[in-house]
Length: 525
Image 1: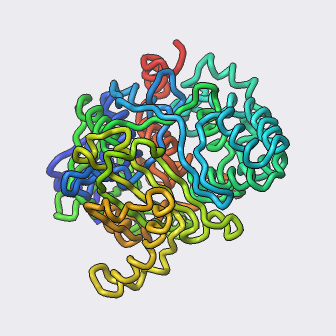
Image 2: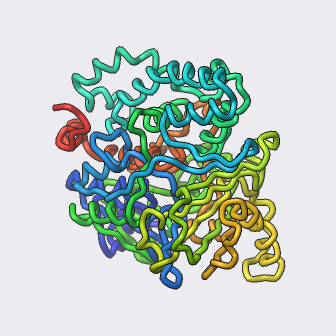
Image 3: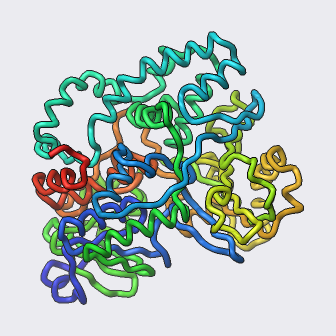
């Protein structure tokens, strides 16, 4: 291991902060730290930034690999932490708003509007007035909890008691919500089961929880679900699609980083996080280059991948072992289509398919999400064509793939067999889709692991909310802070943005954090 004097002398460059990994969490951290005036360098192993939110092109079709459901980006004020980060760094993303999506469920094919009243109409038709009244009562129970969840600006969070200093006088207003905020500390399942008995409504909650966290409702955070319902079930509720897709959000964060003096380097895999005298002092790249970090290092890495970048003696064995033992969500199958279709405007942007409620929402290949964003953003495909991204959300087992080698006949056969679920589902949406196909691509957990460098191609850590919160971003190593889906608040775009903000604010004083949030209209002056 390189010691403190050796690392300083060997460093070819230095920065205040080095951020390892340019997923959304790392970019939020880097851009906010740069906004605070720190000299920031973000390092990315891939040839493009974004992590799971990156995109790619084939034959004129722009495909996405990551998030497909976005909300809270199209208007201000917004409680969406990503929207708040973008505002704080002086950036924004143009969006197209839409208000419904398709469901292919055991109960039938449905088209559901976002918001309380449209969903009540569906429940009334499907299950009768009693079920609709049950859901309305449940929403009444949730409303004060949603208000409580929205009352705490998540970008004001700091470790320990620092949040109170950031909030200032606004912190007193939170005292009135203290009891309700306490109810949001565990899992959502017990709350839902206390107020819901209709099987379809319970299945619906289970579906939403799994889409949010990759876990069932008895393991999904109540706070995360309160935030979701707070956005989706308001009178003017809508979903947003960022024009240009996930890569447009990534590009906005990179612009914010660079406009405030930060730098992004791609194709720069980190081989080691350097630690001297108990403090993170830089990194060594795979090619041997050493980069010093005056303030510290932010690691936007999974808990399984981080230990491999630390010298054996750099961190306590107990902490290292806990990271490596982190439970993992399952992985994904991906399906990308480019197809002819100037007559598809009547289709909803998304379809969510569930095969059998009784198998369990997380059963392998029992749920599929299909998205056709070119219906909102025609520039994603050649004229008269569309792109489609299908994926199985965190229900594809790694064990099915771990012994296969990409490019072999056995791998190709397994891929055809497993990805046939997409064919079956899309048959119910567009029966003649095969005649329209221009390009078809299939991805597996091995693909997911290759491009995202994610352990077992996993969606992320499977920390159940009924057993306590996600681990925090601090570490036993001074100056080494974590962000991303592996730390509090967990999986999903808004939580990852929060984790990135918390990592950046670890390196600035509370009064600086408050000043930025006031200047950005996130906090009142």
